[in-house]
Length: 182
Image (cartoon, rainbow, N blue to C red; front, top):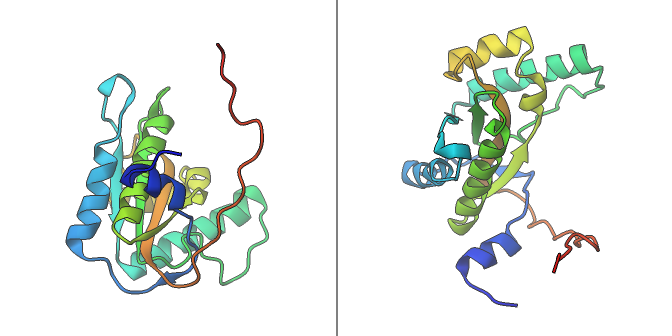
């Protein structure tokens, strides 16, 4: 198999769920977020928005609201210590207008951020829970205060930080994921 730094990052990046509480250097975080802004978008619309949260109190409050919404609106059973972002020191919220390509644009941007983070020695994990709960009234009001555009849907988040545990092992890839139509 061919190799280069991009392919190595794709092959070696893992979702990390244990984080060291150290903050990320501002220049490293800016580089990761910039990688998101460079992602392709449908019709080059560039309508996505990234809300970066580093303040621990804001992160805890957002988690509390998400937890409450998951219990109230989805009937989930969650422990008191539940933390959807795994106590990472940074959470980047990817939101977009609810258009045909809004979610796909955010997915491309988040993948760019994950690969950039990995290349810079920063751990990451895709976080879904906010995409399920972003329209719960309490959550939406808090997102507005955080700077998420009111017309946007949250399509995903990136937990970012230094790995605070063991490097996760790769899961084997399933058979039959590719077909070539020749």
